[in-house]
Image (cartoon, rainbow, N blue to C red; front, side, top):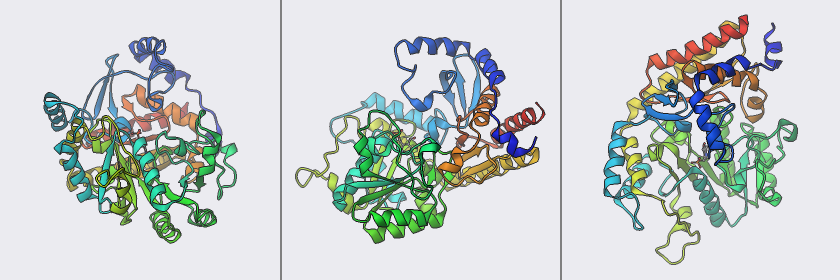
Amino acid sequence: MHARQRLAQTFDSAEELAEYQRQNPASLSRFEGAKAVIPGGNTRLTAYFAPYPFYAVKGEGSRIYDLDGNVRLDFYNNATSLIFGHAYPPVVAAISDQASKGTAFAVPTEPEVELAQLLTAHIPSVEKIRFTNSGTEGVLFAIRAARVFTGRDKIAKFEGGYHGTADHVSISVTPDLALTGDTRRPTPVLASAGITPNTVDDVIILPFNDLQGTTAILTAHQDEVAAVLVEPILGSCGYVPAQPEFLQGLRELTQRLGMLLIFDEVQTFRLSSGGAQALLGIMPDLTVLGKIIGGGLPVGGVGGRSDVMAAFDATTGTPKIPHAGTFNGNPVTMRAGLATLRDVGPAAYDRLDQRGSDLRQRLQALGDRYGVPIQVTGAGSLFGIHWSAEPVTDYRSAARANKSLSYKFFLHALNNGIFFTTRGGGCLSIPMTDAEVGAFLDVLEGFLKKITTG
Ligand SMILES: Cc1ncc(COP(=O)(O)O)c(C=O)c1O
């Protein structure tokens, strides 16, 4: 069958589903019980997949053990948040030591200062930082800080950009392509019910990797936009990188128009000790952090220019932005973050980069060898597999890839000892070796054989 015809097909996953159910009966029964007390059976959308997720009982390095006794290589690492994989011994030691001393106090502790010192030393654009308990909160406070600093109300984000679940970023995250409108002037599409429709009035949606389109839109709104929020790599689209010149252009444009540039590095901070911005040589005004900076515990943060961050300062009177939070900067998270980040040296990033690019190249080569068009995207330790014949450069091209084939491969991988995501995105962790990379490639090859001969 011609490649394009194959990609237009809807793939039936019945065989993989049956095998998944055969391998995971205990998880099914747990999930059935869970649905009686939790709507949808669990508390986190991204931890659900059809027909039901397996229940993890233990993680160790690159492996997850489940309730049914299956062991899988974890190529998702709690949505990229575990750079050392599971239960990294120095993190376990730091957490248990701190737990024995107390987990939370309504006064500051030293680890908070130490983590702030480490992060400000590593990220040139981050002069000051405040911690939150999630990336969502980091984004929310970055937006407030930008509004206070500029005196403007609107924010601009890119189509397909995921920045957590606050109202103003829950727009055009994974919109139905039929609703997205003109490629160069994307129509804002609410991503959740329960958000007031006029939230859309404060949000401008931009076309990713399209500097001309972005320039036209921002110029038309130049006195209204407080900040442009961008992920250096579109995560939820399956790790689609921004072109460096696009981000460079965006930096110049926002500066010219008096808008702040906010980098959402919740995921991309795992690319280097200074995040994607250090690799690109770009200084955003604000940066949102999360995931790996908490060493596997709940965390987030917003940092950046001192003059912008001054809005949070309570030492000179009532702060312009009251930033409270019962568990903000709690010492357990801070110590887990420190135990992680202190151990990721340049050699570890180099190894992750090399393994990541090796994996991406070999995945692409396998698709080419079997005549099945796939597009492999990503950078550093992040990778995305898109079942598509067209280059994937933004949300729309990612959304046009064959989703039923992506889901079928996801199930096939699960049944063969690999966990990653239904949309084809994944990441490596430091303990992974060539053996784990080889295991992933073998699973893809087995799948390609199956679909080309079956
Ligand atoms: C780029 C990005 N920003 C923000 C968030 C939100 O972070 P959290 O889930 O900690 O609220 C995420 C989470 O996946 C993310 O990937």
